[in-house]
Image (tube, rainbow, N blue to C red; front, side, top):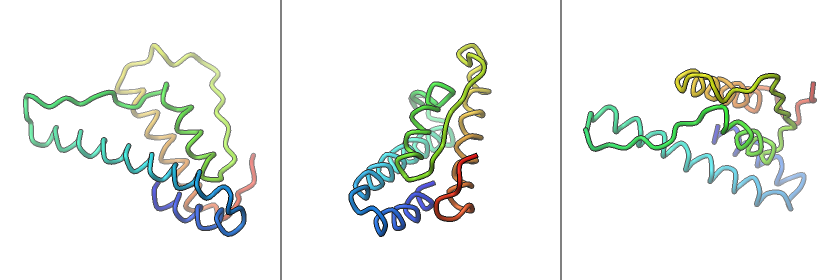
Length: 117
């Protein structure tokens, strides 16, 4: 995701320099989130009984993810037809990761300025 945002940021900076700071902020936020995820994973691998995992992303984190992707220049909308608060935590985290991966792929493979649906 960070690489896709950086690639998009280069394009944004060349076309709209005033938005470059927003893209850099998004890259920083994404990097910090990835680092937190990595620390959590390392905690699991170490099997340290004192490790805290912190909150894992789920459906409630989707609006923030969408905003970060929008800030990187991809016109994207989030439409939910159901309330997702009651789904199991593991399913919610999987849903978040699927959406995150799909958006990453769009940013990586759709080229500059993909047309909205």
